[in-house]
Amino acid sequence: MDTMEAIMTRKSVRAFKDQPVTDEQLEQIILAGTRAPSGLANEPWRFSIVKEETVKNNIAKLTKHTKVLEGASALICLFMDGEVGYDLVKDSNTIGACAENMLLAAHAMGLGAVWIAEIRKNKEQVALECGVDPERYDLMVVMPVGYSDESSEPTPRKRTLEDVIISRR
Image (cartoon, rainbow, N blue to C red):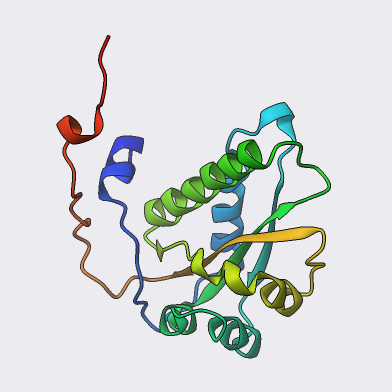
């Protein structure tokens, strides 16, 4: 799949088949994330892979998207390392680029994924479930990953290019 095809056909997947993803697939998704740009090459991303049912279900209870997380084969929890960051906005943008790379990689591999940020309201509990220090590692998103059990049709956009391009000079 070429890059434009991946971008134009990727969709957020919230329903998954009962089919496991492999550690190698999860590592490929994370590797794609680590290829995102980062200012001063600080690479503030850190990851926790959750496949253990008990931990996955405990994390799922910390969001209104419980069923989405429970139904996924695995969760990738994406954290920002507070010890390497230097600008919150820049580092947050970096994490967003990392997450988008991961979503595109999952899609290109025939997997479905979505990022869940609403769970940040319980970020300390998620960090503890992952076995990481919530003082150092700031949860940014949880990414459920699995084989999609949804239509492959991409979600239509609400706005046209004419709506979003606000200036041409």
